[in-house]
Image (cartoon, rainbow, N blue to C red; front, top):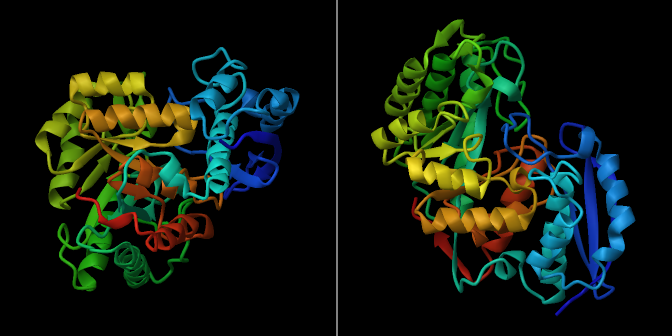
Length: 412
């Protein structure tokens, strides 16, 4: 089996221009795995800490001081790599070494091992003999923490080509809707500047209802039936509206407040009216019983935990017990290491919790999550629609469509 012969890192920049860390791992003196860690804007309270004291340089120093502890390990032995990282960090959230370091080291190791064994990375992460593509899920209109003042409070309106039969058709349909939405927005507001949010979604001056109406109109303008060939999703990111002191959801931009029961009705109304296939974080990150009520109401919608479950298997177990969601986001850097994320995915799959492997708003041009989505049997891959760091993941899916182990699309 291939063994790690060198490991080093550097401080680079993500798609927001913020500092992050990249790690190179070489196996058998020739097979390079290289990974640059992403970061989020809407960050769950319980997710892994990206860097000690917020400083990538500190993670890099720790890596340099301990690099020899990784040399000689089998690069395909994900647990050994993970255990070595944990020997440097006694915290529960990677605050000592940084979750971004754990992310980069474990994925770089797997990429290096895949090259050394002449396999694709999705193959060495799974024991399956055949795979199906997840449906790309992309942000077409952004607000909240991903866009500036005047945009909707809702963080993301998303598109998914649920009627597509191939990965290329699915990607092209998402691109069509994104382009058509720009035309719709320009007609609605001639002063629209074509501004976009962090993930490439248009960022217009519009309230929540108008943003949803215009997104649905773009779909229908192209001749698609909403909820059939093409479906909408919403990331409510409700923890960003939740005011713990007032015990209310404060929608500053729209100018209203919701009690917890009002919030359930607010989210439910949107799910019903727009036939959402996907509804993420419709209530705040600790409202397990409220999420359970929404999940019970909409069994055909992917009622998804992100801030609720933060790619943490212990929190997911609590959500499963409470029936708080029927789907969950998998973000490796929320968990820290890829080993942690795979454990989370295994628990989800064992309990019929459908997985959505996701990018972060501050991304790199790496495409590893396309492989992770395949390996974990994810139903969707949340990667955006446009922007170099988003398209990199989509282009990788098209390359992988040439692989004979991958046939067709998953069933949602």
